[in-house]
Amino acid sequence: MTVSPRRVILKGRQGESIAQTVKIFPQTDKGLNITRLSAARGVDIDYRLDQIRENGKKGYVLHVENRRDKPGRFYDTLFLKTDSDVAGTISIVVSGLLRPGAPEKNRQ
Image (cartoon, rainbow, N blue to C red; front, top):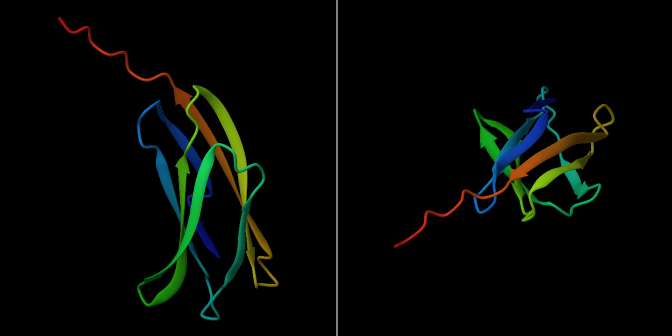
C-alpha cells in the first residue's frame, strides 16, 4: 500500500485556511477498502475520506483541515481501518502549529 505523505503537517496563521491531503493506493490489483476512519482526539482537525480513481486504480484521498483557533501546537492520529489482512489499520500522525494572525495595519 502506498500512503503519501505518511505524515500530515498543518502550519499557518490564525484566519488562514490550513489543509493537506493524503493519497492512499493499494500496491496490488486486489484493491483495498477502508471501512472506518477515526481520530484519537478529533478536537483540532476536521477530516474526510473520498474515493478516487487515478491511472485506472481505485484509491482514496484523505482531506485533513485545521479547525483550531487558538495559537499553539497540536497533535492527533488518524486511524484508517481496512479490510486487508496485511494492512489492517493505517495510522497517520497529524501535527500542527498555529501562529497568531498577522497584525492589522492602523487605519487613519
